Image (tube, rainbow, N blue to C red):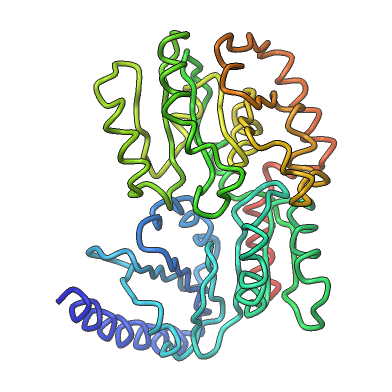
Length: 359
C-alpha cells in the first residue's frame, strides 16, 4: 500500500515539477534541483538552503525520498522518477545518486573535509562507477581533491573536481558559539561500510567504563545511516536508565559538539570537522591499528594527522585514566594544522555561488 502511495505522490510531483520548470523557463530563470537519495538522513542538509538565496534569477527546488508532507519548494520523489524531469540547469546531491533529470549538469558535493576513505576497498570500484555519472565533484579541501583524483586517475572521461571549502563547517561557525562543559561525544563511522576499523563492538564496555571512571556526560552519536540498526538500539536499551548517558540522533550536531570538551571516534570524518569547529581534541579508538598498513591507509593524511588533533588509543584499558588534555595546547596544534593543510574556512558559500554563476 505504501509503495502505491509513493508511486502516486511521485507522479503528482513530476507533473508539478515539470510545470514549475516550464513556467520558470518562460521567466528566463535557471533551475537548481537539490536531491537527497536517502530516506532517513535528508534533514542533516539543513545548511544547504542558505546557499540558494543569492540570485532571484534562479529557482531552487528540493526533492528527497524522505516520506513526509512537503510544502513550498520541497517535494517527495522516488529516485527512479528523476529521469522524467524534463530539464534542470543544475542537479545537485550531497549523497551519491543513480538517477538524473533528462537534461542537467550533475554536481556531487562531497561532505568530508579530510582525505577520509570514501568506503571500504571492496566497494570502491562500484562507488567510482556511480560517481563517473557526474559532471562535477565539489570538495571541501585540496586533501579531498586528491582522494577523487586518485579514484579517477585511470579514467579518461571523469568529473571535474573543484575545491570550494566546507559549506557545513562555515555555516555552523557563523551560527554557533562554544559553550564547553564536561561532556564527551562518541561519534563513530558507518560500521556497515568499515567493518575492520569500526569500534561498534567495543561501545558498550567503553561507555560502561567512562560512566564508572569519569564524571563526564556521555553523548553517543551513531552514524545517521546506522541509527535504526539493532546494534544501536541494543546500546540504547543497555544505558537508557543511566543518568549521564544520552543517545544523540539530532539532525544538527552543532549544539552537542559546541557543548562538549572531547570527542571519541574510530575513523569517522567528523573527527576533523569537530576539531576544526570546536578546537577541541579527539581520541581515535583504533583496536585494529595494525590493519592500516595492510589496507593501504597508513599513507593517508587522515591517519597521519590524528596526533595533531588528539591521541590514538588502541586498547579500551587506556580509557581508564582518561588523558588530561590541555585545551590550549590542542587549540594551537589544531590551528597550526588548519594552516598547514590549507583548510579554507569562511569562503565556501561565496565560492559555491561563484561556481554556479560561472557554469
